[in-house]
Amino acid sequence: MRHSRPAEPAGGLTVDRTLAAGEVLRKGTVGPYRSLVDGPGEAHLVREELAAAPPSPARGSAPVRAGRRTSLLAFAHVTDLQLADVQSPGRFEYCNRHVDDPRFRHLVPMHRPQEALTARAVDAMVGTLNSVRHGPVGGGEVELVVTTGDAVDNAQWNEVRMFLALLEGGRVRPGSGGARYEGVQSPAWGDDGYWRPDGGPGPGDWYQQRYGFPHLPGLLERALADFRAGGLGVPWLACFGNHEVLVQGVGRVTDGIQRALVGARKTTGAPVDLDLNLDLETLHELFIASPERFLSGHQHAVTADPDRRAVTRQEFVEAHFSSLSRPTGHGFTAANRLSGTAYYAYDVGVVRFICLDTTRQAGASHGCLDEDQLSWLRDRLEEVHSEHLLADGTTVRTGHDDRLVVVFSHHGLDTMTNLGVLPGGPDEPRLAGGAELREVLHRFGNVVAWVNGHTHRNRVTPRPDPLARTAGFWEIATSALMDWPCQARLVELLDNGDGTVSLVCTMVDHDGVVRPDHGSPRSGPWLAGLHRELAANEPWRGLDAGSSGRVADRNVDLRLPMRLPVR
Image 1 (cartoon, rainbow, N blue to C red):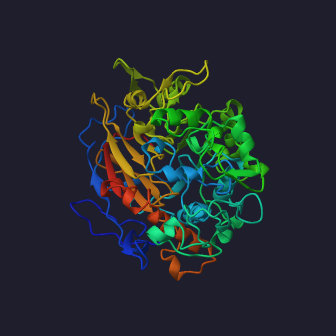
Image 2 (cartoon, one colour):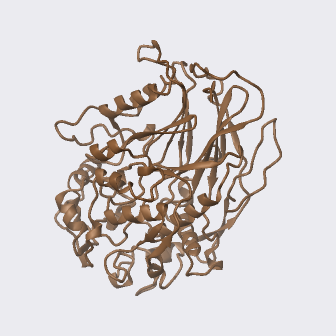
């Protein structure tokens, strides 16, 4: 963990440097390939867009007082690990050849040059989070880690096992199938459209020729070798994303896909019996409904592996109830185990966390809620509000004690749009999108934040109540650990002592080697550092894609007027 010193107070506010040193670019020596170096951290930017809003209508609150800031809760947020079985026959890497075709925008990228190293990057982030004992601003103990879905990439059982071993501790198996690597990056497959670290015939692959990617013989064998992980030292909460149950996060798991996943043939080319000259929506809907039709192209023989089988949502939930889980089930409840649902509430001190399942199993990557879950959400919010508003504006006093509320889910407001791409079953309940969910949250004044992922981009957005009844809340989206900038986020909930609360966010780098060319090529930190460097150079989601967000999306002090519950 690389700490930096706090800056001097400015304007009466304490402005701290980031907990992890930011990374500064420098040009590589070959072509446009760029490596990373340590750089100074960023100060926390105070954002007050919601500061003029009315305070929460919560009753039973402590009086406003001037004084020192105190910590109410500190937690870490990590999202979109997308741990992938990179040799799986149920992947569609060849779609990357169509990355510039707008008709494929829902289906790419299907392959990243760094993805075989992701388990090592996750392990390095676990090490970092274990070393962060206290928040850098409020000094409160970091009590838990919140994950927000897409922990795996292709809804496979072996990917789920890898995820749980990394976070709970245990033997991690990044590889699958046979003893040797059998995937699109193999020189034996002769496809120069993928980065081949072992080299191959000809002048080099597309990544090496165009972007100067390095030649690293033996890398894939080291990356996919088994290792033991120590696991997180603090409790962590789970969440369900679209990649947990859909093929590549988009398509339904059909019988054909089930057979392909555990089979011994891997497709490496475009389908031979499917016209790809379809319009965007038709192509997208075809992949959602029948993804196996995209697996009829040229194939290579691979070693079959029964652990590649697809998992259901109920199996995903059940897998979290191990003897190592802290808390038991990682937030999932006994009711979730029985019903196969994946939403729950979890209380820590004065804060209620509400986990939503925003994935639609009918397919497509964006999210929604069904009517049953929306009703459940209103009940869980009412339980921690002494008063709230009905849809018609009537105030209801409940007699319940107040808690502050942090909602978390995989999707955020702007991606809760999956209401009708394809119909579900005839008995599927009514679906609710982002606009309806936002209206519900604005009637409960103790909601301070909605934490999510999915977009692979850092973004912090104020969500004021348009009717000015409550203070609104902050939506905090964190970038993916899979893709650049490969970071997590610390969130400190502080009582400012002046009638406001703050959500202080600090970006955190993992413990991977910053300059892999200076480290041992056999160590875990070296592999993790190489993952981050490759992610920075990935052509579509790398340094130039804007995934780091603006300065106002990273290290920020987010203010809210709020009368706090009596503790």
